[in-house]
Image 1 (cartoon, rainbow, N blue to C red):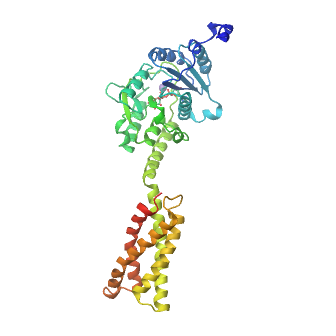
Image 2 (image 1 turned 180 degrees about the vertical axis):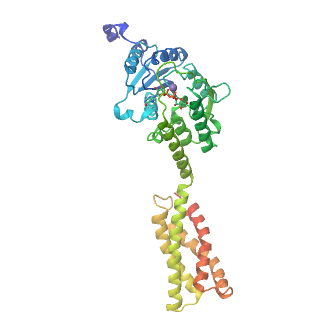
Image 3 (image 1 turned 135 degrees about the vertical axis):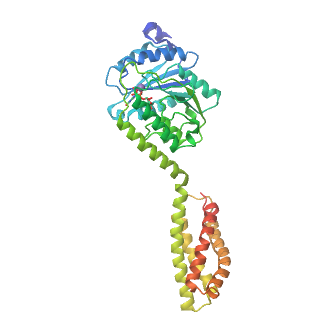
Amino acid sequence: VASVSSIGRSEIPPHQLHVPTVPDVCVIVPTRNESANVAPLVDRLSSGLAHLTAQVVFVDDSADDTPEQIRQIVATATMPVRLIRRGPGERAGGLGSAVAAGLAAAVEAGATWAVVMDGDLQHPPEVVADLVRAGVAADAELVVASRYLDGGSTVGLADAARVAVSAGATRLTRLAFPRRMSACTDPMSGFFAVRLASLDLDRLQPRGFKVLLEIIARSPRMRIAEVPFTFGSRTSGQSKATWREGVLFARRLMSLRVAGCLGRYGGKVAALSGFAAVGATGIAVNTIALWAVVTIVGAPLLLAAVTATQLSTAWNFVLTDTLVFRGPKSRPFWLRLGGFALINNAVLLLRLPLLSWLSFHAGLHYLTANAVTLLAAFAVRYLISDLFLFAT
Ligand code: GDD
Ligand code: MN
């Protein structure tokens, strides 16, 4: 208190007179050359959020006097306002990286909700409280402010071309992710609220561009709500949307789509092809061993098949255990080896009658017949190994 009186009350923004409280809502506003817009924005935010513990974080990449404007607001506003002024290196990351930096700051501040919005007043500040209210009411983790919901509108889009591009990109995105976008009519929106506890920032970080799209594409189980809003017109400054961003968007959408598929099936495809490759070498080993035991030792076919299978089983196990199902395993070595040998010998019991029938009755060469029985056994062995023995 002593320091307060020595500095003089009038120099300290009102909210700094209190012990800083953890904000419920952190409003993240990326800005590039929004000099005339930031002051009215914070004015309208502070009246709309008066009933909440809220703060505003500007993430600024401007070349004009926007940062000076913001510093003035920081000193005078009735709510806490912060400025993150980015260096030239960070600036290169553009809008997506600015939003990501703001989200990281919101997490650090301990906020419950982050609301991301534009700083040019095209996103009405009054809607911010609606987003959070809707999120709490619906127990949602993400609330999207949508221009395409009943009651929303795109009137503020500059011209017919922008309307068409926006509608096209929206349709494309919803086509690429039909299930995930079923709850989101406006995946291109730059206006949304997200519960920070539900957000995995590390997964967003590297190439985030359309941050909302990244969040939805990468968190398939997120509970989404929507609130309609009217996208206003820009009254000051210029849009930074470019054709280059359009192309980047299309590429990003495609790679997110591919990543989504690989995430689900990639591991299985790799394991199956590895298993098939090992299986192929195992068939070769089994065939050579069978031939050797039959011709060199002169053993009868079925006895030779039993011997050859022990050899190829050992061979397959070593390769499968080290190459196909790599990494830590939940079952001990001897159980894996024992189980593997048991399965191969159980399968052998089924293979022997088939082998004998194919070679003695169907007239196949015994090596061909043996290979056929091995191929038939392949699918069975893969399923059992995948589901039980090598489970990670
Ligand atoms: N920090 C930072 N860095 N901010 C940026 C940058 C940047 O490189 N580029 C743009 N911004 C800020 C702007 O200052 C503004 O506050 C906000 O991001 C949106 O930029 P605009 O240039 O106004 O975008 P827009 O109006 O054309 O596009 C809006 O609508 C699209 C949907 O039609 C944005 O909300 C988009 O996110 C949205 O997809
Ligand atoms: Mn805009």
